[in-house]
Length: 394
Image (cartoon, rainbow, N blue to C red; front, top):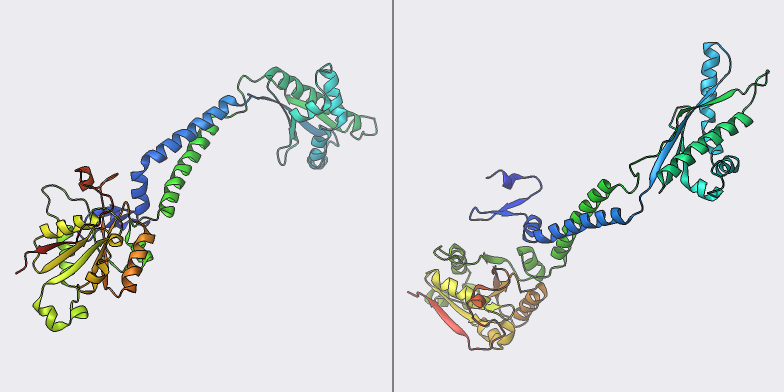
């Protein structure tokens, strides 16, 4: 057994003749790869378009360091540091109060309102530190830097005014500017790279979901599980498109299966021993699938099998009568055009008429049209008399 056939996710399947086949979903993806590619490209294009359409924003950050001027011993300094850390959330909250915001408005000569300043400023405190970052964001990089620096200065002044003082009247909390805000030349938003990656991934996922949804919503008889859903008994064979110059092993295996069908169940042991096997091959939907099967069985050169052809089971009222006089009916489903509901209806109709259903044969046709249709043969509904093909009777 090959390595691929042992993959844990079941990505491949091996046919009885040893041919390696892809897992149904991988086969579907390989068949509709263009859908996945187009969806991925569209997602990438949408991500790029959103980045181009969005307003560019620039961010500038000023950093403040807080310390407690309390005591000279190591113990006093540790206590002061712990106290400062415990107050950092309060200091950060102070940056968004009206006292600080009004100071920023005054510093900028009233070009912005308090609400505008508040919407531009973001104050954060890294965990377990005595540092506060004041970040301002605007479409104008110079304005963003000015607002960040003005807010940092306003916070410094406010802390100096309200912080507790020692016995000498000196503020116990000191604030120092670690880094002033500077105008940025690189926009902080939108992030074109992130948008491109997100758009590409979302497009890829959407493309895969589309083909999976297509499979889940597809009611065509394209697999043996679909035949089981329709209640049409087992799949006797699945015939691939014929290839010129290649022996039709699929048809030979099917003929061997038909020879092994228990004829005594229908006509009795004595009569079964004296006549060749006779089966009615009926198409599930209008088309030439049944005739294709009969022709391929005829070319398979197998003795003792007679096949009567009904191009379309629903078009021949005599099919049910003939079916009771045969060894059974073989339903033929074109995997591209036959649907589960039609196969179920055909199977139920045979059962109601007391006709033995031997099983179902699936025929894979080339994309878009059958081989006979490509050669000019009609594929519409027909009501021609039944054709009988005898396969080298002894």
